[in-house]
Image 1 (tube, rainbow over the protein chains, first blue to last red):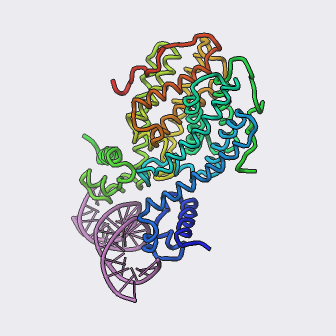
Image 2 (image 1 turned 45 degrees about the horizontal axis):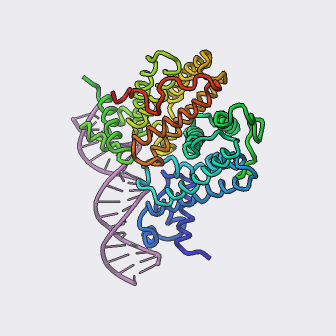
Image 3 (image 1 turned 60 degrees about the vertical axis):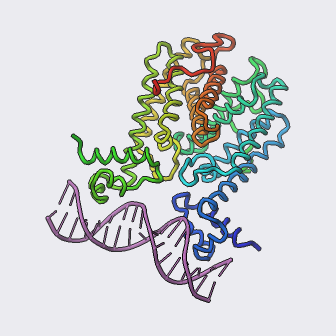
Length: 212
Length: 212
DNA sequence: GTCTATAATCCGATAGAC
DNA sequence: GTCTATCGGATTATAGAC
């Protein structure tokens, strides 16, 4: 059992995933649901409101990817898993990633409050892991917030450049590039000389939460 | 003296800078030039081909920003200036930055060969500075290509997140965030203990090439 | 080579009947 | 709440005169 509003929302997500923002239209959503286009406006005020539904769905899925990290045993492993969750979300849910993090003003100008709240929640979680790493001496004492920004920017830059085709098309190659870059950063954030390698010793990725 | 093709190209750039991708249309370009819309198709096969003109212009402007870095005296200063050129380009020419580096498939699917060539040229230049830094002992010996990727991803991630409103709206604040993150990365890439600070000692930016 | 005119579609959104 | 019909607009692209 599902309401018409839910069916519209589901169809919108399906259409966006299949056709992208370019092929997304109210008319086609209506056609998929089996109603006329104006009927949608009884449930959503306009196109932007329907598109917001898609962003929110993407954030939920990103949460699923990141939540898996919290089950790891040490703060450092949780941090690595968070970094991998971001990678897996971007490469396994590229359309959602694009819409939530890439697409600038095309489509939606004002970003919904959910987005800011979501950012804050997950960012705070990452800061917590980093803080614990510093307390344990796994990372050098530093400002955990600024350190989190530094790491977030690195992984976001990597996946963004991958999304706009700057690292070729091979996912395997990109995963190697990703982890070598991230580990190079982490190396610089570690206590000098101490604990040269924590966790995996090679450049391969931890277990993939999304593909397992 | 200018050909009609050049006038179309100029009008297209002007319209895109003023209205963005959303407000860009063949009709409006034609209107600006003072010809009918179909006349444009005598000089450009379709809309994508005209949009490519804009990307190429953006890459030329980016080159202007990055070329200023080469006049600095040391490899490390040239590297810092390159990193600042990227920042200045992104914040001073946001529309060009968005189109060349953010906008995914909306608008253009296949990226022109110019783009790949440009990437390669400027990237190679950055790798050269990094290599020299390593030879001089300013940076730890490492793979200069991977190091360049790591740095590129960091600055690209920072400016991309800024462009999608993740760091608030204050440019001054963002510049501070940017340089603190970049310097944190560079710190980790330096020889352990040696040369704790090269160049500016505070977190402020070098001289801005674009705003001076 | 450039023009006018127009085709053939698509879009978001609304009005008003039922 | 859903429908038909339609408005007002956009788009790429072509036909044919000049």
